[in-house]
Length: 156
Image (cartoon, rainbow, N blue to C red; front, side, top):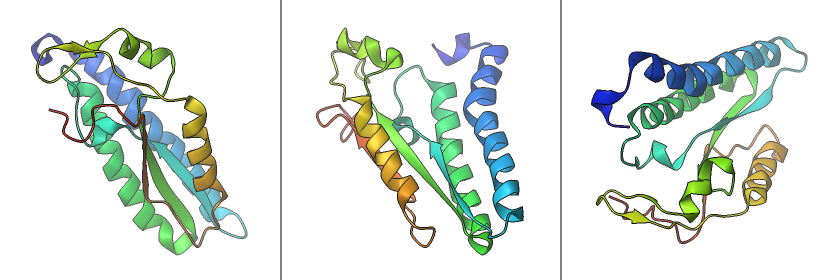
């Protein structure tokens, strides 16, 4: 929605879900991974293509996904001494209920509606599995998985 119409309560709900929720989960996991013997583990944050290029009328969502990238980088750095590997997967147009509107047309930066391709959500799951199965000596810091023909490169 337009930024001037976004209520503070709606803004907070998105921040609480996308950023504070991720922080609280990571914090709890980090504590366990640091205290266990042997130390270590892996955290994979759920980013978004919006961490790189926003969609129109998405200020709260986009801001939180940018912030999640900073959270990922900071946790990754702080986790090094404890063998806690932290990465992020940025997903674009996986076929879910959330992306159903892509098939009917979604608002583009030029103000037009356009149908966008989607990909099978199993492709995302395979990528997360690959990231999770790596030994702790290796890390995929950031992975971007998107429908091949979706507007990403050159969006805007």
